[in-house]
Image (cartoon, rainbow, N blue to C red; front, side, top):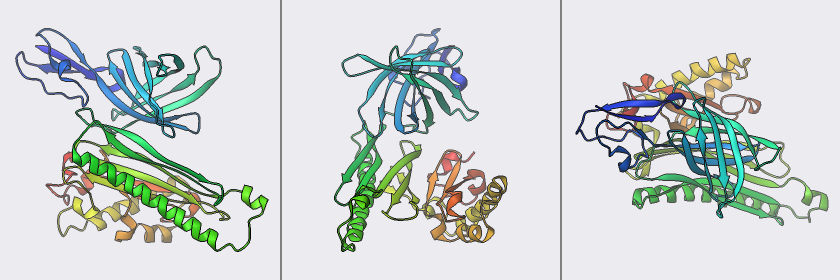
Length: 382
């Protein structure tokens, strides 16, 4: 018998038994063909790649790609607001202590990550620790969480950004959106155009609204007004799921109009079917005629009531009933995840602004009797 080992929970290796002479099928999304070619009687660790998102300190958002081969780790990371990739390499010991050294393009070491790698009961990895300069005493906390990215054939996701500041109109824009790399498949390119276009439209709308508001002002702003907080637009995103056939993205859009009492926040989602080359509608997930809104609403109402009770009754009953009732307008923001259908409720929708956004994940076991048998959710039903 031949034993293949793949990265498993808590840094262990998962053993896969293969009969001699039987072709092997890769279980790790990024394993290379060479990783499976071996002679009988040899034990081989299959390298596995994981994608992380997190931050150094409270404001330096980053994305990191790490590949583990036994105790050796290598990869790269980039700050979301910069985009330049920084190489990293290091080790993960038997106690899950991670050490990563980072290097610039000239090969000079520029920093070091030291932290602990942990894996939850669902097999999702996270890393937390401290970053410092080589030989430096000052340390900055960092944290990373694994993103559910499972592309094959070298496809990856990278972050692009739009950054703009206009002193005359007193506004700032920082917007990020995902783009796939590593594939010439036109379906991935179509996804890229969809993401770029969506964020581009939101930026254009913000600039148009800001210009219109400025045109209504008939007097020149004073120096104090000019130096005060201006209008702003911030767009970030999270990957809810990324597979060869499906990408689910949640955008968080924050905007502020100069002089307003508080900022506005809302979510916008795209669940992109790479097979058909189009964004999915909620109705596309369910059988024709199915009362999916009623099923989803009933679960969400009950779950939100329980969440509110645990948090000290932060959601009032009337707003909750109105915002989570079985109406299409209440279920515009949703994501496909491994665990279930994630429903996103923006501030004000089911409670006061102070309560913030709310999220409910509807398990696929609740939806299994109404989902389309040829739809994207079937693969997640157990």
